[in-house]
Length: 179
Image (cartoon, rainbow, N blue to C red; front, top):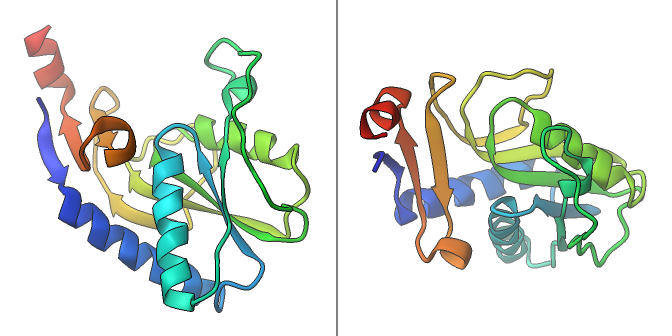
């Protein structure tokens, strides 16, 4: 088991701060929508949209994006679980994922998102930025920046899928020693 980086309270406070940052940068929630990358970006996106809705008093729509057909590092699937029940065109999209690492997931997400219309803008929000980019992609909103080694493993657990909220880091040396 790795070292605890964020517990449920840390995640809640971090998402609250991020919601305020997003609203401030966008001067409110008008024309703002949130889209979470499946799997763990989706629950985080729902929480951000809910927090922004509470702050602004107006609903911030939220959808989920299945990027499996757009990945270049995994076999393509025929299923698409995307649910975006609102118009993307001419909206300001906040694309949400739990961790950014190489940038390949975000690249696939952008390709998938463009299948649903042409947004006015797309901004990236991530709970954890662990560095080591392979593509020129950077988050606009970030909960926590970690210094990691390439072989380290960052795990984000969310209540909706895992029964708990926490972020853990398992260093490569610890993973190799337990293997």
